[in-house]
Length: 298
Image 1 (spheres, rainbow, N blue to C red):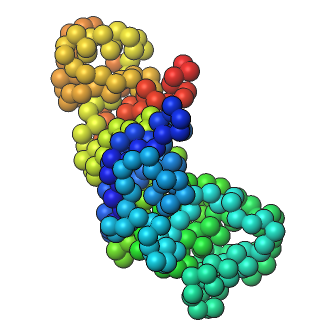
Image 2: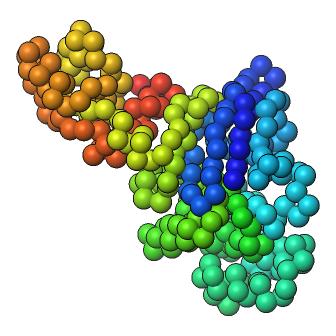
Image 3: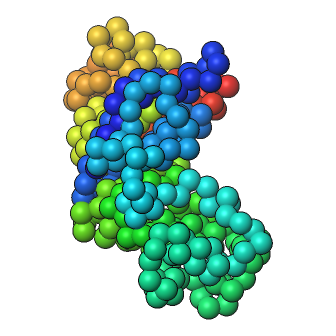
């Protein structure tokens, strides 16, 4: 289990992570979502001991990462697949991990097979790897110690559709066997498919967290119109809260009330549906509208 409590990290006058609190439970995949620069990577770096917190705590099974006697046997980490030594072969990198962690020699070949790196690929220098191959090698390094916890930042980056499906099945199986997975990704559909719980961060603070079912079910009503300004004004005048989204708004009311309000105000609609049907992408864009770089620029 991962427990982050009142975590803050500042750099001079800039606060990258601001009083962040959430829990990633055992036996579950927790999706960690947010726009670029929201604080996801900083939070993960603090969790795995690469960056010290300014205040607060980030614990794995009740202990700080730096206090774990053999961290690689307890926490598998993949934050940057391109950080591997470019002059070594894939097999050499895994062998170093195997020796460092005190694992049997056979674990290297087992892991190469598990992440589907062929004999030829394992013998290549990492500088000659594609991004997808580097991702598979990074996952192999994270998994080789058979840890109870996985912390992965964009693990599907560079994978082809078959590789993404493989990644999804691997993480689902890992959690189903009791492991804890904290997963950050910009591939929202993949998060929606595999995650049990969601934590959304924006501008260094938690925007919302909970189970996937709770958050998507409580997302309100997605409504679109050609005149978005008139739509938003009509809903606001009726006391219905709104959040801008792509081509419309996310309304804090059930679909029937939203439709009746727009009819009475004479605002023709092009779309009206419960937002849980819109899925994670709509909810994410609505919740992070004020912190999106593209939205801010617009």
